[in-house]
Length: 115
Length: 114
Image 1: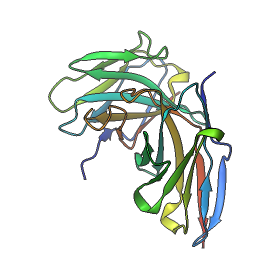
Image 2 (image 1 turned 180 degrees about the vertical axis):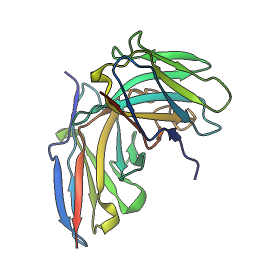
Image 3 (image 1 turned 30 degrees about the vertical axis):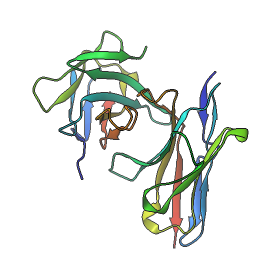
Image 4 (image 1 turned 90 degrees about the horizontal axis):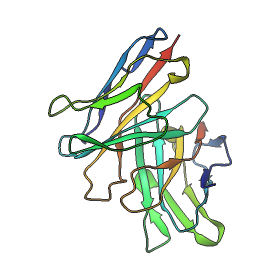
C-alpha cells in the first residue's frame, strides 16, 4: 500500500539552529500538507501546498517556517531558527484531491526536540 | 468556538471486549467527520469517514462509527477488540468537502489487556 515517508524520525537540535524535515508523499498525489502535534496537545494544521505554491497556512506558520518541493518527490519543511516551542511531532500528509481533498494520508511523523 | 472533543483520554479494555470511543463536535453545520488511528511508530491511518448518507459507517479493521446529529457525536465502536487495536485514536472534522484543514480532537489512547 502506498505510504508517505518522513525523515528523520527523530531530530534533536539546539535552539536557533535550522532544521529541515523531509517527506516523500505518495507519488500520484497533488496536495501536500504539514501538521504538527505538540506533546499533550492536539494535532494542528500548519500549511498546505499545491501546484508548487502554498495554498493556505495557519497563524502558526510564521516567517520562520518555509516549505519546498525541491524535486518531483520530496516535500520539505524548514524551520529557520528553532525555538523551544517548536518541539513537536511534525506530520506530513498528502492527498490526491479526487476522493475529497480532506482524505489525507499521513506519514509516521518526525519528532523534533529543541534544546 | 468550533471544537472537537474526545472526552476520554485513556481507555483500557480486555481483549475480546467491545470498545466505544466518544467524539463530540461543536460546529454550526454538519461537518465531514473522520476517525484516524496511530499505532506506535506509525502514521495517522484513516479508519473511516462520514460525508453524508447512512449515518452508520463501516471502516477498516472491523471498526464502525455512528453519526448522531442530535447529539453532535460521531462515536467509534468495535464489537471485539484485538491486542493489535492498542493505539491512539483521533477524531477529526472538516467543514467542507474540500477542506484539508482538519480539526483534531486530543486523542484517546486505548490499552488492550490480555
